[in-house]
Length: 304
Image 1 (cartoon, rainbow, N blue to C red):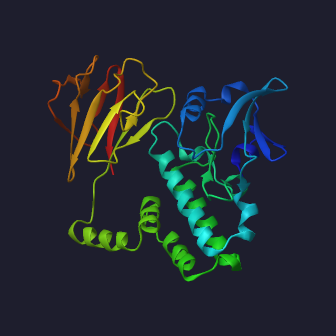
Image 2: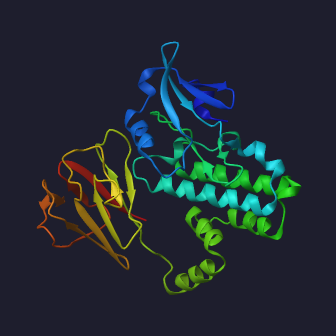
């Protein structure tokens, strides 16, 4: 159940094949997240629009070309089910890596995961509000895992050797959502590769930047060996749109093994590490707990 509905922060209203959430009060609405949703061209979300309903803000979702996953399950065979799951996991990773949206605000109930019955592409329902449906990322991911495991074990037309293996992998806590996606998107070779890597190094450091005083929660995961930050979508890997003083192409983070450096790319208002302004085009090593300032916005570095 959507806890925001349960707590009466929002009320669901069915409108034919579409539906909406009506906010109990205007202060719940996150204008920044709504703007980000409207700018997304990846197609991983069910299209929504802000409207008014009896004086309250209404988030209206246009789902009439899609079918709820729950309704589609009886007609799916194992192969098509696997395709939906792969697309679902891929879209979750897109949201997680977005930097401006929060997976804990996705309504992950099977009634509100929408699927194109022809292409099997998945549309997620995101609530641009100032509360989360799930208390943390672990709870969100656990909901996905347990729901899919129950489906596989409880619906006979979904069962096959491949889906039973998926069920075991979903229950394996050492496999992340990214691991699962890469395995089933890329084939068996991925886990063999992963096992070899783990034999050489039991721990790989990943780095995140978390905005300290942003209007909404912003977490950027560094997912590439060369990761460019700035405000120009399409030109950078991590888009920072809430501060106009940040340059279109502001700085770059480089990863080499478990070492990370940051380089200012001749930004107008500078890049700082722990209060020290960096010289343009000169890499500077960063690590857990460091504070990076881009223009006048601070981000804390964390390693995992």
